[in-house]
Length: 177
Image (cartoon, rainbow, N blue to C red):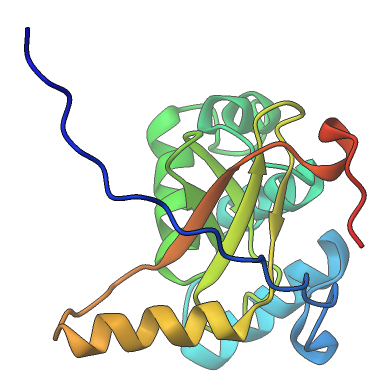
């Protein structure tokens, strides 16, 4: 019988206090209308073409308020101009991802609106496996530590976020201190 590989003993590290809900409210998009305004402004400033289909996809992602799968997005967009085919929705998602307006959550194969669509940033995202909610945290310490590790290795990152799977406070019955 094969022996299981030896694991390093885990170290118990106290979790840091949760960051404030919004560290930079001036850069935070609050609600669907505000998010669309910010993205429209950023697209004008960067010379990007925010087509009606791209804007509609973003609106549905923001309004969902939780991770949304591509086929659920397609269903919500069905009946709109030009949005009846999956390739159209996937092209809109590619554009929104490429420019940092949404996050792709690989672990649950879904998309989440970015709360800071005007700036590039590294974010930890908490994903509840019970209620399927997701929360984009603002933690510059995690961001800076990850960027430093990447730079020390000479790695050129094109996309970066950390997905933390578990159960949210509501589902687990734990209330943050």
